[in-house]
Length: 96
Length: 170
Image 1: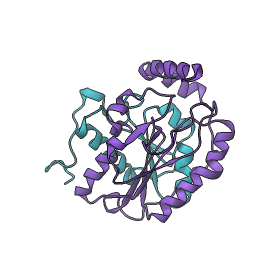
Image 2: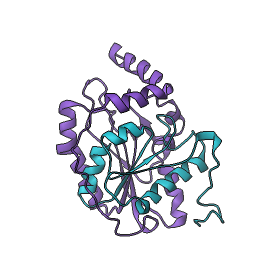
Image 3: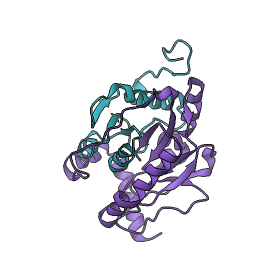
Image 4: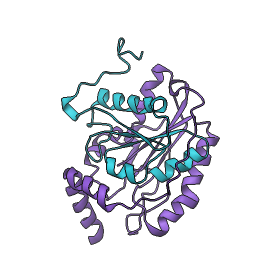
């Protein structure tokens, strides 16, 4: 995935890549990388967990402003069901 | 289904659950590719004013499109276009190298197109086309990816006026 992201970035489009395997990200980093400690095959979260998925996507998009170096990595602090997910669409979430 | 495909599915079902094994493999088994130079393009607009595309390596494709080739041990470097307004029920996954049972229930777990559409309420614009790859490519297929298919997707994203691209794995 890092290879494709690099190609797209090379065409002038900023990219961010989500990952559940920090080790894989370190081997071939995309220009911007967001690691989530979730399960393989569920990088956005659980099936049907709309708020969780929306929050992770929103935070991944936020990495466009947070990562300033090529190959930079941020790790989201979420821990699956143990975390609370604030819906970016919720009034008062600090977003909308 | 061939014996080889059945074996890969069994294996992927195991290591999808045994996250520690996948973590160790990623750390010690994977070989770096693509060189040390990582390209960089500064965003021209904030993402919440941008046109955003999704690119996934999770094997997502429209049901109407041909499935990815699971018989080639080197994988399949081709891609599938996914319309921005497609119904999630019209998408499916062909990928034997991770257990996509959860994503079969809700494709947004690996390809959050419905979640991206919802963010339109905050100003985000959804690109007209998104792209699905099957993220297991080796040898000649990796060459094809870097020489042909990845540049072609990049050109299509440029043609669509995409300002930001989000990549998701399987």
